[in-house]
Amino acid sequence: MEIDDLKSEIESLKNELAKVNHLYDQSQEQLVNLINFGELAIFECDKDYKIISSYGAVDPIFRNLNQLYGKYKNLVDLLNHCINLIEEEDIEKDDENEPFIKVDISNSLLSFKNSTSKNINLDLFGKLASEEIYDLNVKLTKSEFKITAYVRFIPSSFFLKRFEQKVKSDLESKDLLLSNIFEAIEYGATLLDLRGRILLMNQKAKDHHISDEAKILKNAQLHGRLYRDLFTNETNEEYSERLRVHDKAKSNQAPVKYSKKTNGKLVHFEIVPLFDHNKLPIGLFISTKIDSPKDVNIEVKINKITQLAKHLKSENDNLVERVKELELNQQWLMKKNDESQNNTKLLHESLRQIYFYLELMPFPMSILEIPSGKYQFINNSFLKLVKLEKNAVLSKIDDQIFPDNISDLLTAKTAETINTQQMITFPFLDTICKQYLIKHNDSSYILRIYEQGYNGQL
Image (cartoon, one colour):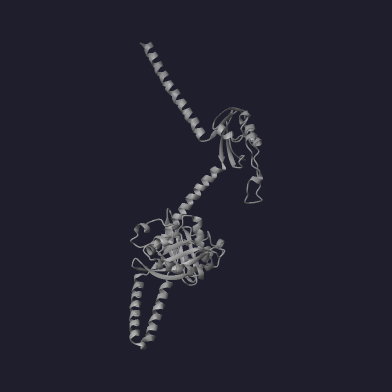
């Protein structure tokens, strides 16, 4: 019975061993697949770099470097004959005095062999026949009897794709930030190109332009659509009148204002022509605002007075002077109402184009990062207001830019905005500053818009 039990135990152990061997084979196969998939080539060499064995993505890596790579049995020879090292003229340097260091493969590997270091990393930069630059990353580890090399091929396109992904992510984040900024502003902002296509329109601008009955249009993405598509309920004459105002702003190269009712509310439009740095027209910026309840009451009273005056004038010519006085009063009040309007800004899908247009906006604005307080964006109108160059403001804080009395005021008002999380106004130089707290993801920003930022019109 003991012999039978022993045989049974041996058979059981054989079965277990077979299972272990099977699992080992599977793990080795998985390891090889993983190495190949990761584009990693592994060379096991003796102390003189003679290649004992190799596995992994050897062929996919080295056949692009040298079709005859297989004839080299020494790692030093393999690397020397397969890598077309870049020369100084192949790269662009920011600093002309920066020295160009070319890696000597033979000396680097010999130095590692004779050193006490257990591992070393080498980045060997070469150039393919297609002129694409690549990095052959070589990690060497040393044990008592052998040297193992781990080689990874990284083309420049890999870095470009990674950089492109990062830039795209940054653009999307900034676009969302700007969207939050413009939706927080209390005015409508619309940007048109020279062909009358909409580049930007925030929600308040949609409310000021589009009839409440056109619900689908009001909630639609309007970027790229023609401005005239918004006015489906207007006659050709009514829309032509709008175009005449636009043409007047372009020809006069100055803002033009008009008012028109939308959804039963009187909307005040201001058409501002935009020009590039060469003074060539690039489009129109349309600022819109509706009257506050107080303004509406004033307008109603003015209209009643005007109607009464006209009635009296028709009955008695002696009241002509009185009517003129009332009309002058009306014009004065309406002018004051118009002067209270503010031009704000816009969102566009491309960050670069957004910033280009923002820099040309006819009113000063600035964006500060919180809690650092550093200026992240300023436009040309702001630089004219503070009479400073851009490099004297960007990435600086108020204390580094303005005298103590001004910087102390700005610091106190910033703290007030952060604490109350409400829009506040305060005097700044020759303007009235409107200051907002904008939250975006895990970051916070201070947005400042300065009224009376151009020709005293804001």
